[in-house]
Length: 340
Image 1 (cartoon, rainbow, N blue to C red):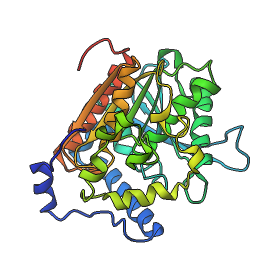
Image 2 (image 1 turned 90 degrees about the horizontal axis):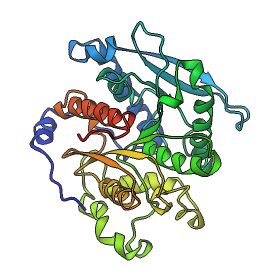
Image 3 (image 1 turned 135 degrees about the vertical axis):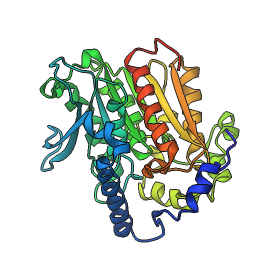
Image 4 (image 1 turned 90 degrees about the vertical axis):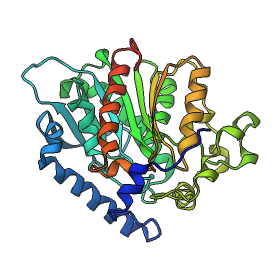
């Protein structure tokens, strides 16, 4: 549990009346708003303040097939550093944010670019998974799992070398997919060595009802109540997205579906980033505690800003978060050899 308050930065920013996603409208409207916001953010790459993200990174889309999935092509966006060298690079598989039911490869474009532009020779492959309700929850998780195997086998075709590092990352719902795919890969693909996980505001529980949690966790997960009226995403709005997953009760406490319930010993090092005034906040801190207790090295950054704040590029902390994200990825790539 980490007490938090809205920063002065956010209070000043809201006075400018930014465009806020309306989570009370229908799903089609929410998707449209989020997609428009993402494209507006990408258009800012033409501005001088975002020149490094544009000049030092190239991005290309492909549509790929997964051997385990019939009749569907998945869009992937491949980010690489612009450079003369042909050396093979470490790779990251990335899952975008969007509360499981919205978003696409555009949504986290600036963050994916920041991981490279701020000092990492790395290939990031953003995988566009199928969303609910069009696909059921277990299909979405399986898509993520199969994508791990696909990129591990195909990395060389994109200039990657998994022997130099194979990371899995994502944000919010994407962080949930990243963390579960790491756990699933441990059992399903023992030959795959995932060297780090980059999980931004991770969802690790299917329920935060006190009667559903172990006694030792109850005082650690208070943000869903404490930040129930947080700006940008309230607890009621978040719960609607979570309930839309429609995970059966007998699947909700399996670690392969929600990472808090997993066996954590032997998992790869984790970089986590959490928002303070955010209903989901304490799930990340709980997961950090569980990983540390299992002997897994972790690194945390914390921001006193609400969920989704990084979708506002003109916030000073968004630029800071991009640089710290890159530093966290570098920490993973260098095997936690230095403290940040």
